Length: 219
Length: 216
Image (cartoon, rainbow over all chains, first blue to last red; front, side):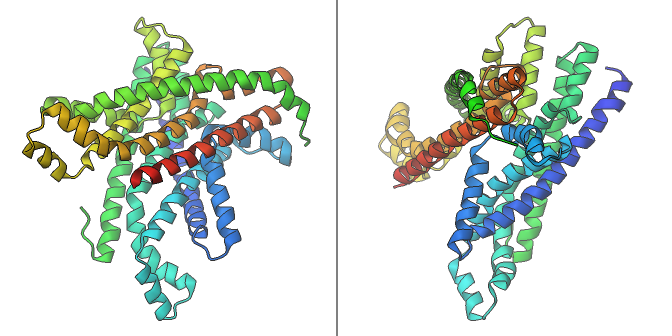
């Protein structure tokens, strides 16, 4: 493989994959906390809507959602999404639905007495959530979020099918140029493996930090 | 924008064909992942580090890299090595291999969750190894393993559209062919998306019921 292929396709491809990962992770985090907390809301209607959201987005395939946003939504609304943003939207919305389950589980696992203590101190519901429930729930969310982030990284490879020039797309082009598959695909798999290694390592560090804030020693 | 029911009706024959292929991939892929996962799980428990470490490294690598890239790897590289498989076979093997690394973790966690006292009791009763496994450990481990496997079968179902990338005629690829032939993009893709929800949602309810039943 020549240096030109590296510089024009593979390295920018890695950068696009990282960007996709960061943007869709940010969107997924917003969706996860929004929908996850909505599932513990007092109002039945809010709970129902949040549950419907998670079931629909967890029920369908991320790739089909991506194609749908890219091919079906434009004629529906009259505007076209840039492939990159269609991809971020599809990944963020569907992985956010998985994240919402994690948030709900962790919030539900906080001891009820903690919440009652908040009531006794006449905290508002928002204060209870922000000052009592979330600081205890967040460290519990980190290991499952770490797994989800690795799944999301793997999900970003799907965008190459929409023609976004991520690292998988680069592999496809390099394969066409060099007529050799084994080398480039091995390299690309290793690239993904290394990125996920960075994710798991940094999430581990984050878990230790957030637990230290609570005075709990992480394993 | 208008919804055309006749386009849906026209798509139905392809939908059934695609559904059949998707379900075939799902069943065969599940069987591969269940059995291969057992092999990996046995590797995790091997007495020698020379077996344990490579198995852990390989499964970790497969688990943290995208199925799509693995699909392309097998689809393009195997023929270079002189192994010719159809797209369907390659896709099924890839998805089975990918999910076997998940099922291996399920088996491992299920077996580890059996309390140590059970192993000690089996030793105290001097049960032979196969009795320890089949009469004591596995019946208890299965309660945790079965629902988790069910969840991965559903996850696998939602990953089968990836096989469209290597031209397997499953649901997504059928909808793309239909769109290419009729220039109707909205209906086929939407029908396929809804079909996935209609299969995955009841299946997940089933798994949840199973979880509750077995947990008792």
